Image (tube, rainbow, N blue to C red; front, side):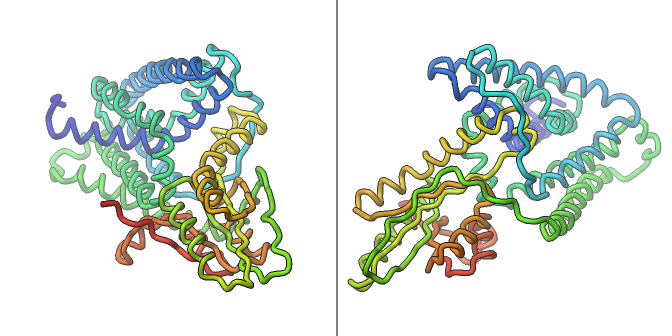
Length: 395
């Protein structure tokens, strides 16, 4: 593959997309491994841990590239990629927990990052090796570009994947595409394809992408119907102040630290000014952190993971709390780990709330399919009215 060609850059973009889709969990492990270090050492731990992980990833992919030259191993790799793509579309499972604490030393944090990356990166290694089509230079270039995005932009990446489920579907389709392409490029298969149309690899790749999306959606829908909802885990709760002697209008206010969630806060403050004088506004501010996958949790103890979730939740609540404090509006604070939409809906029902208020991006009705998954999930499960507030468009 010639460096600088269109094929080269397409493969680079595929590798970057793969690392972003499959590398978010690694970013969480990095944050957990370094959280107990002093600030200066934390930066060093992240840097050297990432350097070590990159080096190990390149070595693993180098061997994967050699192994994929063995007859029928590309077929095996292609089937694994198809399964990985389907698995990407399946609902999250509950958190398992290991006994590894966040490292208190720089060397311990680096070791944890490298070991976790080695254990968790099998899917990533196979996918990148398939996209690279035998070019180690392409692998190194793609990883050097994508790893910093995953590590330092992990919060944005995870927010993007959470808010726009269609991105996850696109990532699964990409894995299916690469798997379908690998299937017909195996050295043991090629002799049977002599004289086949030139468009066969393209058709095989497209079939792989379509197969992953269709099968993944069907399996995910069945799994969602069959499983019981994961129980929410409370991180911290401070009840809303009682409004004695007055009628109450109770709002559950969802906050995730984003600008569009602040639009919901402003909506609630505006609502206060429109209530009758004999009616008191009661506000419960709620943040729900998603649980991490079991392979991430296996590297940290329950206590370390609880502290991590609480830190993330505190940061997400801070902007909304500042607005409410400045307006003199009393409120309760509730922090959970679980499925955000379900937790918000169940919490509002349990508290007898009159309304759930949450923000979203200013999307038109024609782009409703791209509304955040939390918004969709809340509306689906809520038994009280849900007010979805659009953030004003930036000029």
